[in-house]
Each structure stands twice: as C-alpha cells, then as structure tokens.
Length: 275
Image 1 (cartoon, one colour):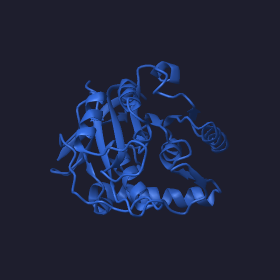
Image 2 (cartoon, rainbow, N blue to C red):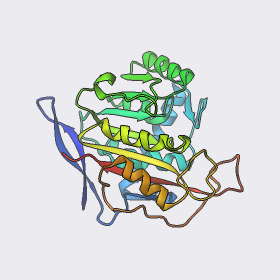
Image 3 (cartoon, one colour):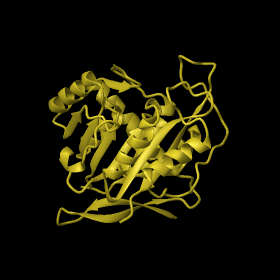
Image 4 (tube, one colour):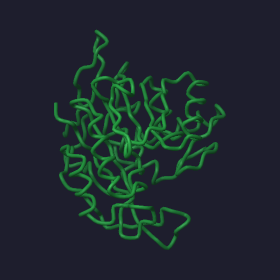
C-alpha cells in the first residue's frame, strides 16, 4: 500500500498526521482515464460527489463549470475525473476522511464550483480566490445562505503576493487545489502562480494541480508538452507524491464542445510540502 499524508482531528480537537491508504502501484500523477472512476481507490468518492450534486440541485442551487453557472444534475465525466482524483488522493472527500476530520482549504480559480461547496458542506474552512467579481459575489451569497464557511475573494496570485495570514489561515493551508485553471494564465504568470500556491501550504500540506494537456489543447496556455509540465513542477518546487513523472497514456479526447476537432486530455499532479 502507498501512504498519502492527510490530517486527522484527534480527541483534543487539534490535527494529527494520518494516512490515506492507496493500492500499491497506483499512478498518482497521470493523464485522464475514465476507468479511474471505477477503481476502488476512487469509486466511493465519485459516487459521493454524484449524490452531492443531486442534493445541491434539489436545494435549488447552481454550480459553475468553465465559467458557466446554472443548476446542474450532473458534472461531465472529465470534470468529475479531476475532482474525484483530487479529493480522494488528498484525503478530503467524505468516504476517505475520518469522522470529525476538518481541513483548511484554498481553492484557486474555482468560484461557484463543486469542490468549494462540497468541502465546505463537510465542515472545512474554504478560501476561494477567483478574479471574477461576479462569481466570487455569487459564491459568497450562496455560502451565507447555506451557512457554509467559505470566503471568496478576488485576489490575483499572479499580481499580488498574498500570505496565508492575510487569508485568515496563519501557518498555511492543509490543502491547496487548482482545478484546470493554470492553463488560462499566460506565462510568465503561470510560474508565479505555481510558486505562490506552493508558498501558501503548511508543512505537510498537499497541493493538487490539474490542467489541460496536449499539443491541440485550445485554452490560452495549456501544458503542450512534458517539458512544459516539468517547468511548472520546477516552479512549484515541491516533491511529487507517488510516481515522479507524469504518466501520459497518449489518449486525446474531444473534451471541449467548442473545439471538437482539437482532441486533448487532462493531467493531474499531487505535491506535498515537506514537514
């Protein structure tokens, strides 16, 4: 079994190191494969996220995906893949966390998205940084209505060196997530964002990064090649958890409905800040 460090709340109410057990040989850092959603390490998390989306829908609340906010009864499989892997591998989804376990979470660029509200609904303190004033305002309004501990701000990590204490989390965050946002940041901003996200982690904390990958990816600045991925790894400056190179299976898919003739894929990487 592989161990990915997470945090567990002990009887005194403080946090103590625990571990998320993963099958030996499981690829942590890899490209999109829908079969992952049925693997034992991820299937319970995927199921829980699907159920949560239905509950959110029946509560009358919208969700944002790629900047589009509306009421949803499902999240497309490639987005579910990145959310499922990110939350399961980092130990924060409901099925893999211990009873009473709570995290401080930073989400970068995900205003109105499922991970922000899902994690807050589990009792986590969530800070969301998103440059969209409209979507941060919507996030704040829904969080207030649902009594969730979510702070949504428009701080831009590319232009502003925000410190964890400025965000109300002295000492750094337990988890930092950046779900397919970094490819919308044009270099050299990508490296700045990568470095500053890593600096906001507490010792022992985990950073999960997913991104558009492939030579045909239609976003502003996707990871076109392994060299580009390595440059972002170097900018983050933290060791990877699990396999030490991105495992690319070579598959490319028409993930963006606006560009059906430009197949590409998603990649994901998990980093850990040394104790």
